[in-house]
Length: 110
Image 1 (spheres, rainbow, N blue to C red):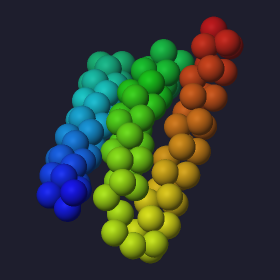
Image 2: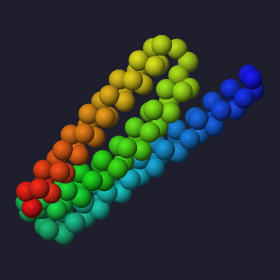
Image 3: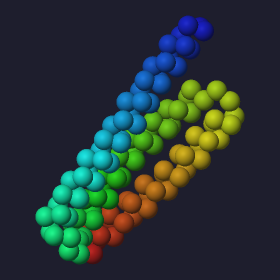
């Protein structure tokens, strides 16, 4: 039983790293893509499509980061780690909801 717990804990830690890395890459890629499009516009006022693309990339990346944090609750060793992870989950969930609301309003206005 102890061996199984150790193996699942290690697997969860690897999966957490993979999910967080994917989330970081998605946010970095979408930010870079939007920045390149913004440079092509010669730094004029960005249109709603550009803002929407950045918000969608950030939302998707945050979803992967949130999945990693939720998995982190499995391997939390004490109550203080669990509280810290819970705080991060709440903050990232609120940011994701705010971005979703912004995407929804921008889409509705167009």
